[in-house]
Length: 204
Image (cartoon, rainbow, N blue to C red):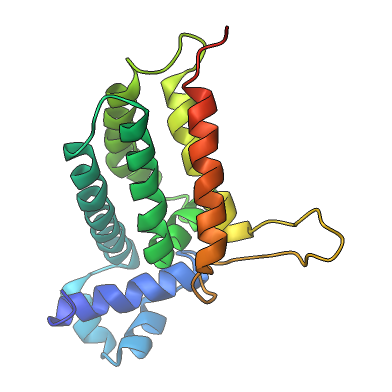
């Protein structure tokens, strides 16, 4: 996509929206960052809302492709569930700008464009919940299970953690910072696996 004028504009808009949010961004700011005349921007997207929708649609297509590939290889057991969780974690580790876009929305950004979760988030989360529904114990709600993974991944990648050891410094990771250290991701991944293992173990 980046080789076309529209693709370069969407890449630039993605970066600016991820850094500043929709409400804190203007089309002129995006045009300046992309090195385009504002008239050229209007030729691609008539309004900021139209460009934002294109950015979110592109972000969803990339995430959808990654997780649909994981769903295609799903096995109906705990290993399959862990594989889905790993695919979700790996996607957001490698796509911090997409994480930032959704994080802004969670904080009320772009409130005048309220339908994007219904368009993009709900279909995939519903399909994943339906995929694992028959595997979870009776006392585990599959929707809460799926969103617990989402909440944990978002929280870890955006807020990090404060270690309890007296000599261990707090760790914080934000979408605009350097990539999350491999050892930290490995530790969180191990926790995520353990959490899912417990969630899929019926009570005695």
